[in-house]
Image 1 (cartoon, rainbow, N blue to C red):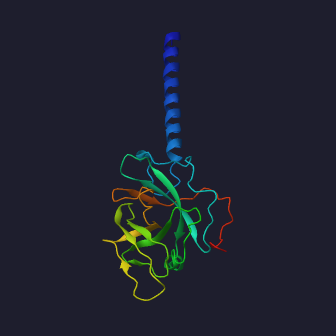
Image 2 (image 1 turned 120 degrees about the horizontal axis):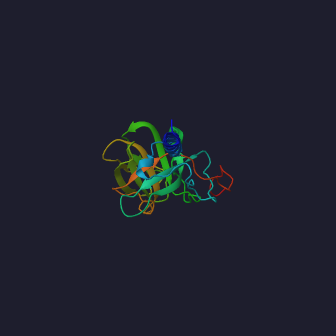
Image 3 (image 1 turned 90 degrees about the vertical axis):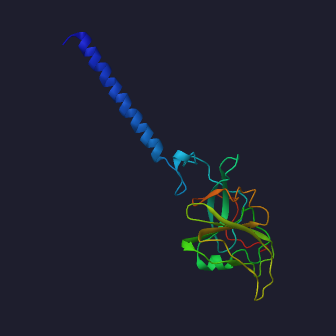
Length: 206
């Protein structure tokens, strides 16, 4: 074998090594995927290196969890991320924002179900006007409506979406648009919020 032949083989070997290294790097980047279940890196959604959302001064309402949401508003705005109070259990969802007048630096509340549901919501013993969006498991907005306060009594109006949903998101009335949650939005619920500097589990006004 001539020196020229050996040099050609060395060059080919080097090309193979670089190609394998490139594929490995690509696979590593792909594996460093979204911190939120269901997000697709091909859609330009945040990776695990994207800072988690959440006001550091927020104070969690006693007895509730919290969850991050990611919103593609469907307009010219970029992807938005928020930290919400979370109702994950039947007890938490049943209580909701009753008696709440201050969200303690949260952007709203997410009601999370294990499967699709179709029931309505009402505002009994809820003093603050709210807006609600019902969201499918795929992130599509089913219905958005405003809900008015009702005293602690029987017969409060029930607000019902136009179809089944997996999540419901409540915010103070008029704030859903600021969160990017409109009829054309896509909403992904899941993931951790940024660390909070406040003490969790404090009931507002306590």
